[in-house]
Length: 93
Image (cartoon, rainbow, N blue to C red; front, side):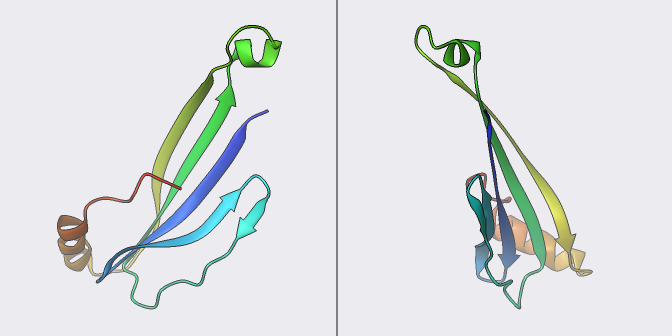
């Protein structure tokens, strides 16, 4: 059984703001910041390896992750400036 989780991140003039969290047991919606200029979603999937599924030996897990832009404002210059200042989308839940 795998675990799939995701977190929206919103870039604002004050930096990155954590948004809605999607996890195995449900969804934790968070209101969007009014001053967002870019929204990304960071996704993580954790899958047990064959050893973990067999019940023998020491279990291990494989983690895969990715970041996708799901919304951006029309001011590309502002987005670029804020990305330079605050860095890319956080890679964490």
